[in-house]
Amino acid sequence: MKTYLLILATISFQMAGAQTNLQNISLSSPAFMMHRNNNYVLNKNAAFKTMENQFTYGKLRIYMLRANETYHKANRGIGNYTSLREALKGKKIRIFELGDGTVNTLEMQNISKDTIMILAGEIVTGGKQDRVVAQDLILLPKKGKVQVSVFCVEHGRWTPESSGNQFNATYGVASGAVRKQAIVDKNQSKVWEKVAESNVKNKTETGTGTYAALQHSNTLNAELQKYMRHFERLIIADSNYIGFVAVTGDSIISAELFATYQMYRKQARQLLKAAAVEAITNGDQVTIEGEVVMKFLNEFLNDENEQEKKVMESGTMLKNNGKKLHLNYYKK
Image 1 (spheres, rainbow, N blue to C red):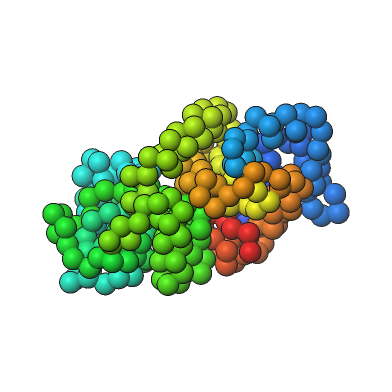
Image 2 (image 1 turned 90 degrees about the horizontal axis):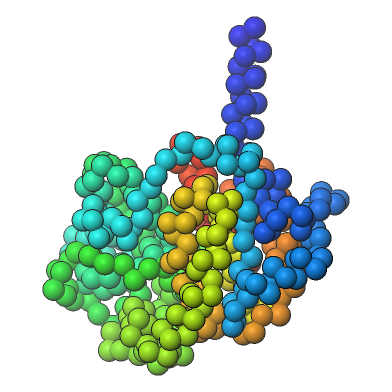
């Protein structure tokens, strides 16, 4: 009897963890997908085309990821997480240079009662130079200092500003080109290269070469406001949404996926902004076919057996207490 219960408990645990797949997550709607030959294929009809048109503006298209009740049920009770922006604004987190300063490591400390979620690709400003966070992480309440992997996004500065060795603000999430270099390639030279390209294309070159200079581009920000006005309400309009795939031209920028709608909604605006900046800066008029996006989703959402290994090779996965909280995945 004990053996039977143990086997049953093991199976139940495995089933509880095996929810982040295309059985439970659809491309906008389950009506647009069919299971065939061990893969999911697109059911491309008039409604699908209407959806694509609705979720396209300028050089950007968003394909929403929609969860079913099984997915929601498996992730119910996960709880709330405070975003990095909220934590900095509420003085709930301290971020410092490590010692006298180490380019690829910062020190973070949660000094609040909240649990703080930080996404790979978020940029913190201050210290001796602005940095982009290179890993998803959870900071538990009052658990002491944690060393965090980062990359420099301000090539020409290595001196403290008014905040000294502390970081008191965030720019938000870096565009796809910069973020991918930090998360996937983990190459400082390539991060600097993509930051420089972004500044040149947007005419925001500065003496220190900081990525955050993009916020001072009148041209970029005027375009960005148009993208945000078009998409911002659309991408949070359905409480079944838990993420999206962003595309531009004939390319996929990346996929974002969260455990709950509440978690996704808290991060949606800054992730949309990052996708829009990427499309404006490096993108083109959207020509990608839905079948390409469906094939892309099959890469990491069809079968969970190798999912974590696959995602970590070309993205990042954040887990807490055995639950997958966030996936960020790039086309190889």
